[in-house]
View 1: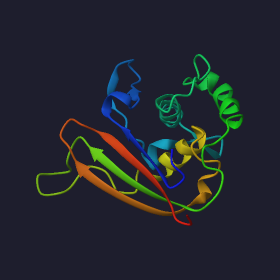
View 2: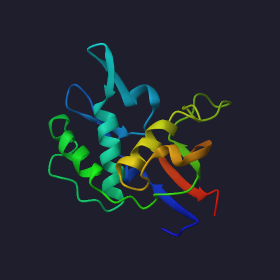
View 3: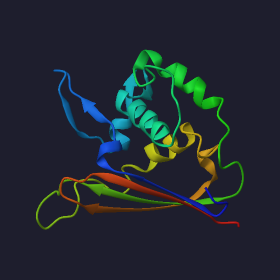
View 4: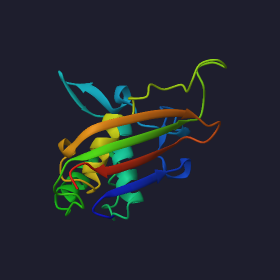
Length: 164
């Protein structure tokens, strides 16, 4: 990573997949704010899909997570691991550019089947978990864009320093 920026591209083969109740697996998972959290005992907790996305981001960036870190019972171990990492970005104000490639359209005349900001919070959280940035509050500006790419979901994440 240079002191002025960072670019991460997650293609479909790097995105986690959702496990359905019947045990089957779905298409690669693009994180969404409505699936990232789930209600539990009068509070909101990170969903299994949210844990999977954070761990996938960390693994993609070269982190060696503890065995079984993606499962609910082992996620605490992964979280402790994340807290011990030395983040690449520890100072300054940053700008996040997020491009989301959606594999399906809402209709032939509409755009991609996802809100442009749907992946924003999960991506920011995953960047912090993966040790890219020490605190996602350093990201002062967000720019999101969605594009339809049939059968090719993915993300392009760019961080640019504002106060360099």
